[in-house]
Image (tube, rainbow, N blue to C red):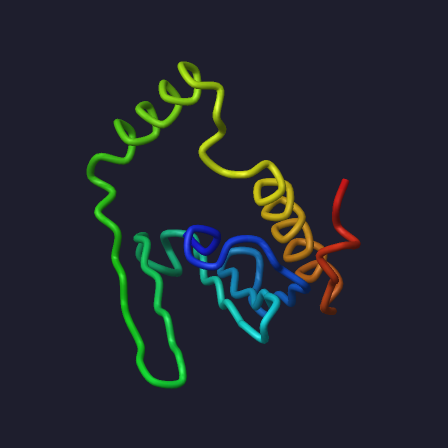
Length: 119
């Protein structure tokens, strides 16, 4: 959901949670900060939500995931028919690097640059 709102531009990641209650800060370009919270069921109730805070307003979004499987299937069929990827490959690669930076930060207790976590 983050990349649907911000697109690419992650710079660094710092994990401040623990293995079953992940809390990570990802810094993006333009001085934007993202905080991810993902926990195991015994720590946090599941669900997806995004909170956006700006200098003038804030907005809370809770996506309707009741048709997620059919949406993903439609997206895949469209890709198979047209050959056009729904999201740029650069965003996918950066997202994987950002998650890797979060994992490294969890293990070491320090901040990691996203550019250092590409495969």
